[in-house]
Image 1 (cartoon, helix red, strand yellow):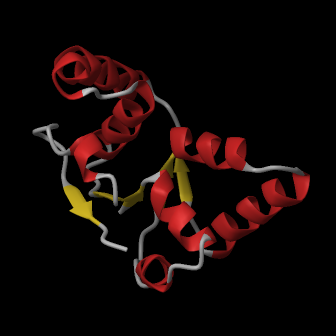
Image 2 (cartoon, one colour; image 1 turned 180 degrees about the horizontal axis):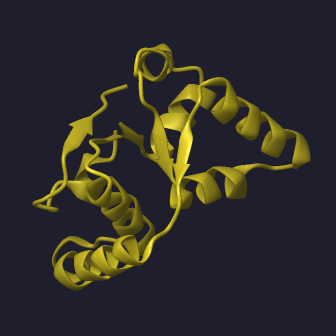
Length: 125
């Protein structure tokens, strides 16, 4: 399962359901986009280190950008930016999930619902 940035934010806020979801998912992935967003949200080096340790502790695999992911993200922007307000970061996350045949788990379903070929699991905190 590919985890969207918001799931990590729920864990940081102490949401037990989000923590349970991560703990009870066998294969855990995040996109390079999500990894960058997590690090960007850190306020200092200590928080950077805590994020890295959390990802290592739970054996998250960071899925790097590929040419196919970039191409698919561009297609998603062309198709959904004007009609649904899809933003570049979300397009990259969705493309990463689709290109790797993974289900994306997010609590921001409205950002992704319109993407037809994306498998989506909606998290309700």
